[in-house]
Amino acid sequence: MKTNIYILLFAFLAVACEDSPDTFRHLSKGRAYEVVVVATDSMQKSAPYDTLRAVLGKEVEMINQSEPIYDVVTTVPSNFKHILMQHRNVIIMEAGHQYDSTSITIEYDTYSRPQVIMRFTSPSSDSLASFISKHQGKIITVLDNAERKRLMNGLAKQTADNINDTIKSMFDVSMKIPRGYTIRDQKDNFLWVSNETPTTSQGIFMYTYFYDSDVVFTQKYAISMRNTFASMIPGALDSSYMATSEVFPPLVSRSIIDSVQWIVQRGFWDVHNDFMGGPFVSFSTLDVPRNRIIVIDTYVYSPLAHKRKRNLLRNLEAIAFTAKIDNE
View 1 (cartoon, rainbow, N blue to C red):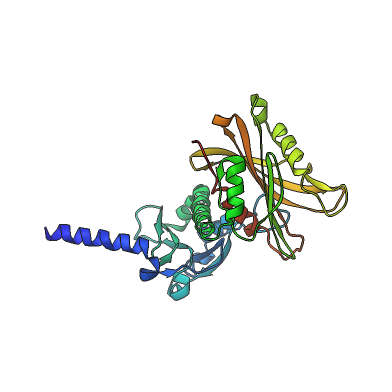
View 2: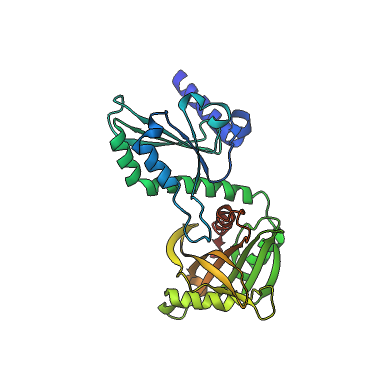
C-alpha cells in the first residue's frame, strides 16, 4: 500500500509539473535553431565531433544565401551548467570503454522547458562517428520537430483571430496565423496575408482548385496553378507580379500535418518585370470530401544580405503545420 501511495504521489507531481512548468523548471534558453554541443577537448578534435558539425552545418536547402540548418555552440562538460544546461537544444557526446554499444538517447524537459537533450555514447570514436553519419536524418528530425513544436505552441498564444476566422469561412481550414499579419487581398478562393517590416516580408497565400484527374498531382500542373494564383500578388512596379523561378526546379517532399499527408515544394520565387525574389515553401493536399486541392503557400522576402532567411521561413512552416481541415 505504501508503494502505491508513492506511485500516486509521483504521478501527481508529474501532472503538476506538466501543468505548471515554471514551478519546477526554468524556461529554456537559447535562440531558435541553435544547438549546444557538450564534448571534451579531445572529443572536439575527433571524427565524431567533425561529423556532427558537418551534419548540423549543412546548408539550408532552397534559400538564396548560405545558412546552416543549425547554429552550434560548443562547450566542455565542466562548463555545462547554469544557462547552458537550460538551453533548448543540447547534444552530449561521450566515448569510452564504459559503454558496451553505440547509441542515442533522447530526453525532454530535463533541466528546462521546452528542452530536448540527445546523448551520443559509444565505446570508440570511430564507431560513434559512423553512427552519427548513419543516423543524421534522425538527429535533424528530432531537433526540427522540437523547434516546430515550440513555434506552434507560441502561435497558439498570439493568434490573429480575424484572419483565422476568414480562413475558416473561406477554406474550412483551422489555422493559427499570429498577430502582426494583415489581409492584403481576398477573392473567391484566394487569400493573401503578410507580415511586413522595414526590411522583411513574410507572406502566406492560400487557394483551392478542383480535383478532376490525377494530372493535378504532377509538379508541372502544381507549378502552373501556383503561378496562376501567385500572379495576384503584385510587385513594386506596374505590371509586375510574383512567379515561380524557373532557374531551379522546386524540391518535392511529403509531410504529415494533423494525420493528413501534404506534398511540400521548396523553391524560389521572383517577380515578373522586376528584380525581387526569395524562397518559398508550399503545402498542398487533396480534400477528398470537397473534391479539391488545398494549397498553403509561404514565402519570404529579405533583400539585405545580413538578414537571415532561415528562421523567417521556418516560422512560416510552423504556421502551415497548424492547419486542420474541417471534415464535418
